[in-house]
Length: 43
Image (cartoon, rainbow, N blue to C red; front, side, top):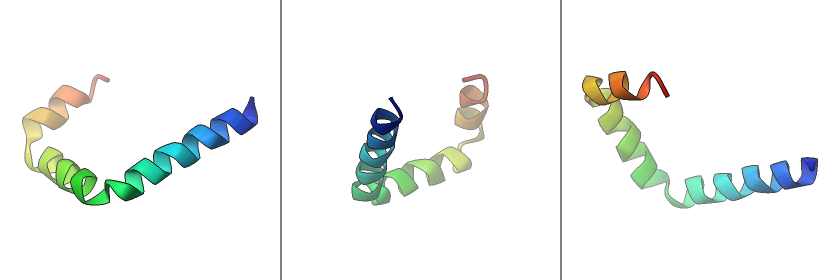
């Protein structure tokens, strides 16, 4: 069970690193767009 969680985290980390440019741009736009942040807060 724990190994599966670690594998999932590693998988997510690899995807995040490979898409870091797009992810950073997306996060930057979220911080720029207060309405998007307010919309995501309840989640």
